[in-house]
Length: 408
Image (cartoon, rainbow, N blue to C red; front, side):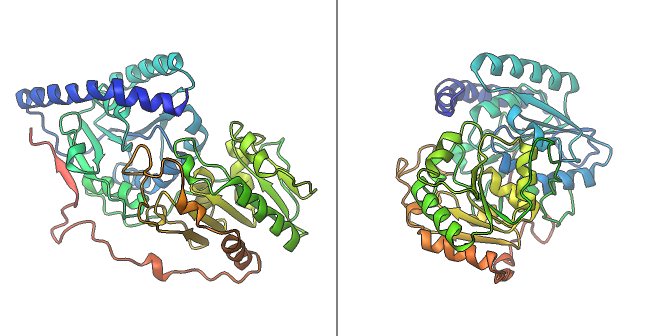
């Protein structure tokens, strides 16, 4: 099902239902007065993130913290079918429930079957990592979990009926720390914030280059096409890299649906060292390619987060989203033009520029090439200073900051 159709259904059909249910649940809460304290030994915890493979990877420190605090609990992850392969690599997840959003009929059938599985288990805690999805909010309610935790951006986004606890979603804090803040609600003294490694599992059909190679990812999820740098600029970058590093292969990656855009990126380029791998790799194959790459050059999207988890040297191009939120690793170089309306993705369903992403267009080919050469010529020096910003996540009494709790 196309993303624009999903957004329309979410805003115009599901949102009014969620608003009504939020009101009704508050009334029920006043009558039942259930204890929603989180200082218990929970046996079944559910975490949900339907969209965004990168966000799931960024949630792995939180999953590790929950496993540390509740070693005997069953941790279930709810997502969509596209993210199943990545979730299967995260050992902190015991079971996976997937919805199929390929079309409306499959979504409805898998939604009801998934809800039935969750209702039978009656989870002690349900953690919804979605920010904007009314569908996810309504889904959370019908799991009938005793404690339901979600995020809010501003007071107008409170759903303090459906959710029993809501945590402030701070755009200026690394997303992995935002997720970790949820785990701190359970008294977890967990300060380790390192992405869970996605161990490679090279498929038999995939031939990994025997010489050094660069991965180029010109694509971005259709959730936010504004994150694309531009096919013409990637095209020029590839031509420059071929000339400067004739011994290296250049692999352009992407999904099957993204292959036409990858082909557009390679228009006019006919070189034996340049290959279009878009649509030719599974998630396992993509992870293996990224894991062994000399360098990854990418927009802000899923393969970028895989590179972070694999600790592969990476040049990231940011615009509609702030790099402060998605960090990277010690081998990452970020290029970001902070225009007046950036970052916008967490404040607008439709960006102020309506797709005319000036923040990305301001990034020049020369800038990206210069940063790539620093990595490829072994001149890169990690910028450890920028990662040492002090952020207080609790007060002196160890009260977790940012939490709004339903009073009844």
